[in-house]
Image (cartoon, one colour):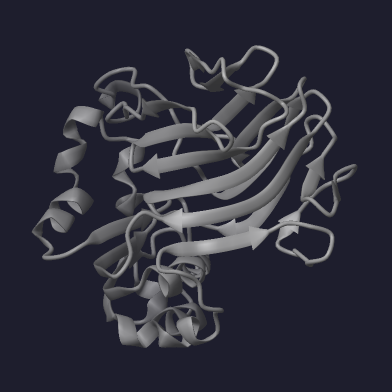
Length: 299
């Protein structure tokens, strides 16, 4: 069948067909998709830092309110987290989000709290916040659930808050309910200063929660049912049903509205580090079904 005639492409690929990606990547510990210690000695071209922010000997100093720094790596694994090592000024309200802004997580030093920018806002007091201490901040995604976790590296005190996406089950008359929007962390990790003087980012890591998989599913909205399934029905979605049948670990990496070229970009950023015996790709309805794109996807 000609690629132009395809409305849905379903490929089951053995991992050895993807070895060319793995050979081009620098070795990282299993499951670590990205890791970088930031300073003014090591070039970091994949970070788009914006105007007014600058590298120092200690890290990346973000000094400009409402100016986001973007990690130019595209991810959609449904079980992953980003981890920052951070120091805040005493007046800082820091935001950790993605470029689409579908999930925003805040650390608020003046009011000593953390919160998620949902509607209504979900927040928690964090009385241990102290500008003289250093912290790790983690933003987790586990399919429909997102979580913000902050850990004081000096005292070991922690605070975490989570929220679960509840899809409406449809659009308009097809909706089963109003749902609760949390966001699915599309597409590029960003961070910045919502207000205050500065945030110093010393390290960034992006980590998959599983590796050495039996099956990894890639695709568009077909493979991302967590965006529209009600929470109660999500275990019955086709991706979850398939993964339950798989012997061994499995995971999905779906993103609604994407094309073959965008799936290929995600595969390059994820698969060499996660490793999977088999890969299933469901894609084709959003365009880009050229012979060149399909050939690159398989090869």
